[in-house]
Length: 136
Image (cartoon, rainbow, N blue to C red; front, side, top):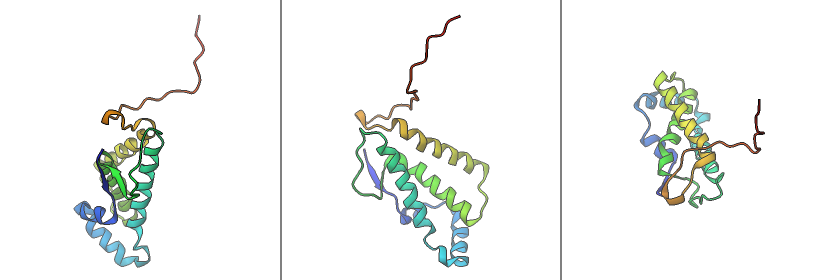
């Protein structure tokens, strides 16, 4: 599986145009919050890597700034959405729906993200106990 860096520079280079100006204005108004994007990137990457490690069959890339390629878009969506909430522009309904899908992707990884044969199966949710037989 291909892994790629997710850093502040990555987030800035691919930042949605609608977020560029509000982010610059935010940094000018709150210079003490200059590390906000660094902090968001770090937390999101750590969360994705923790989700990947929840499956003992997975092996992380040793570089703590890297995520598997299929995780990049959901991770960047979460970063940008949280940055937008911090810097002020109200996300459009489409952006909110995209964020929800990114969060669902992240949560499903805790159950199914697998490197077996290069294929990630659909998540399956099971209980820890057997259901008793039902009768009339």
